[in-house]
Image (tube, rainbow, N blue to C red; front, side, top):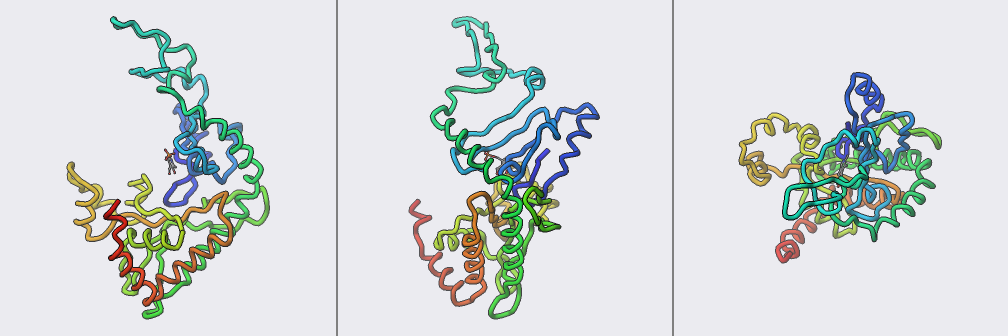
Amino acid sequence: MTGQSNISNSKNPLSMIGFAASQGYCTLLDAAALAPTSVISLAETPVDAMAISFYKMFGFPTGVGALVVKESFLARLDRPWFAGGTVDVVQAPGAIVTMTAELHERFEDGTINYLNLPAITDGLRFLSAYLPFLPLRLSSLTRHLITSLSELRHDTTGTPVVQILSRRPSKTVKSVGEQSDTGSVVALLFLLPNGQMIPNSFVEYAASRQNISLRTGCMCNPGGAASLLGLRDAMAALPCDATLRAFEQYMGRELGVVRISLGLASDFRDVWRVIQFAKLLGDTAARTAMWDEWLHDKTGVAL
Ligand SMILES: Cc1ncc(COP(=O)(O)O)c(C=O)c1O
């Protein structure tokens, strides 16, 4: 089960894990999006395995995650291949392979990223100090961001500048220790005065020119994107040789959303700058100037 969607911003009820376990299922919690801003108690939610991704939690190092796993569950996993580091003896020439006795080493292919691992200890310490305060802080920042963006109107038509697609928190966190019922991810589309979506590739370009890092696309979550964008039927009808480009041509628009993610490092100024940026997209003169710049910018082509 995914603890928190990285695109819809919903949190799934962790109680489902206990229920699944009571029905005899093994349980795996994908906490990659949940762990960066929420306290997870493995005592209260005893999963068989939980996946986390460290750079999402404290920004560094990339490329290192962890599968936190019960030994009894690990012992049940059978790995039908081997690679360097995962074996005790390999007969060569011959066919005998004995896997290493350390269960976790059986799953660690090659040389682990040991030069970066000490940063995880510091990162966990750093995050632990702030984690109790994050739901309160991020809930107010997220609420301010969503409310401000939703209120923006185009200067020419008075129509909305954004369409929020992700889940909004249903309650405001009021004190330290409370948890939010959603994450602090905002998935949205920017709209033209006529209501059509502004291409995400332009939004990404224009944001980067303002030194704003936001992500566009399907967030490695095609099901979530299809659901948010109302594309489930079109997705179901894809031919087996489908490519994203062909799918986009067929639909007549870029597929994907713009995602603004707040976390440990975000502060009020970041939110304010995103709102100022969105205001520019609602201002016809400013938007047209950025659009012309985008069309003439050769950086992407050169790359
Ligand atoms: C819920 C969730 N699971 C898994 C992943 C993949 O993590 P990684 O990119 O570290 O492999 C992500 C990344 O966005 C995520 O949000």
